[in-house]
Length: 306
Image (cartoon, rainbow, N blue to C red; front, side):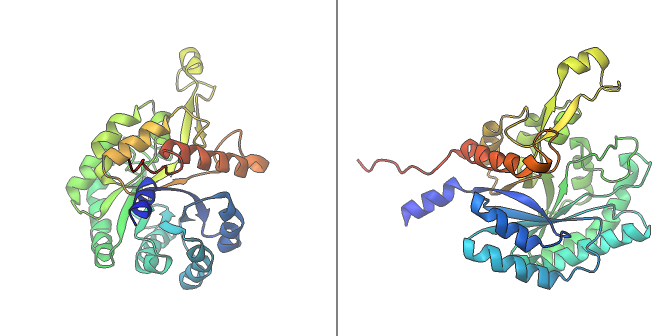
């Protein structure tokens, strides 16, 4: 029993990957890649769930993962629920549906973008953020669900944007001051900070208690390009990378997460790497899976008894 507990402690942070919930056959996709050793999955949707039958989807996925002892960690909906176009209202409805049905997947996290008032500064979006998410936070708490916001800017800045306000620690302070709920937190990754030339470690240490879910995505910064062209020049200076190919030290990231008491999953966000993509996509993802497991400490080794 003690050995089993110790082995479990080595996997307090599971390593998995994201799966498109709107894909042709999410359960079949998971079944194909399970043998590579993924320990968790996050099911994601872009802007809307549409007409997808969540009960059927959950049943088909659980048939695959339950027997393998693998977890569905989070359900994600990535759109703008703060405004009122038809698609924005679809996104808001999708937040509600995922919160209501998360238990069917065995998940306790629903994640996504906060949304924002388009073309307006972040401060202008905070009252609307509170109006929209206050009932969602209560709805989630009543069902044992946590809400987590990804820290992706989607090309936005403090002054303007279309999708998300949760890409800056200064915005996090305003968000959590407006809605100080225990089940409201972050879906964090270092990539989005590195793209803006921000060191991710100080914020990781400060905000680790609010991090509910981690996306496994990294970044490569070409400093020679920055020195020659700057960040607004004609040559791209930052590239989203699969973990193991970027600039971040994931051993240190996992150490900081553990020191802060994080228990959950790092789910690889693939389909972004400029090199390990297309025919090399799963090659890159499996490399990241094994790399992150090594950064976690590798296989459990029991202590000597004498």
